[in-house]
Length: 294
Figure 1 (spheres, rainbow, N blue to C red):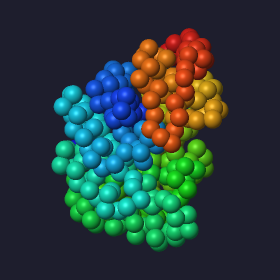
Figure 2 (cartoon, helix red, strand yellow):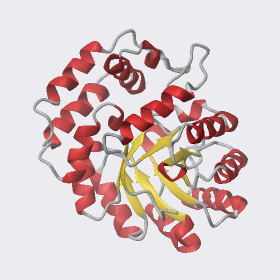
Figure 3 (cartoon, rainbow, N blue to C red):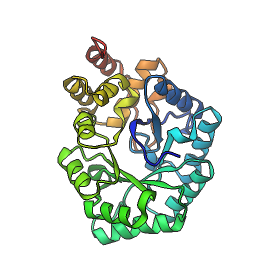
Figure 4 (cartoon, helix red, strand yellow):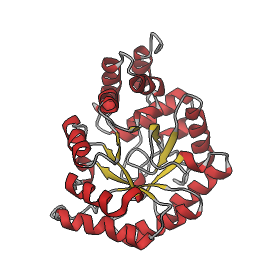
């Protein structure tokens, strides 16, 4: 069993059927295709995967389907963030029962007034409730979305308290200085970054790699960043194609629809609204991919 997520992992988008359920066959095909392009693993039901729109049973059913489709358990991570601690525990027990060890946890969200001690208590309640040394837990820091930051001292104390069970932290703040603070506070944690343009500098500074959404549509650029290729300007331009739109997830899915010729990728769960066409976004990315990444 891998002790922590390292290298090149994709925060996968989630394809949907006409009735809004996960299209597990399409998701498995997407994951396996990305593995062929150098991706090491796939994290399901994170921010890019519309994770908070799916309940425990839905997430576990998808994991089981991907395993049956030939996606290896060690290459799967799953978002385990819920407002209710009991749901996080139930999800994790189910995932461990399927052989999935890597679980990412958001801090408690909704109440923005929680203290650092309260955040630590919540993570501890999850880990204690699971009480299984097979777990590899990852603290998920994305305060601009969740509304609740993970204080670096909390991350450090949790690692000291639980050892390798608290395996890592995903920093999706988009602030490289924040990554550096986490590294200084908890150097034993495997810290991945979600901001694609920070990948090269983060790896050079001891980071574990990336779990990122742009790998869904430009895996070659992300791989180039991990190799230290001179593609940061192209990566930033690619990120801007998606970020500088009213809705990141519908835009990303519209690009997938245009790249694959499969309009089913346009579907999102409410409250998101689907875009009608992503061809223009795809063409912009195509321009950035030429010449090919060496």
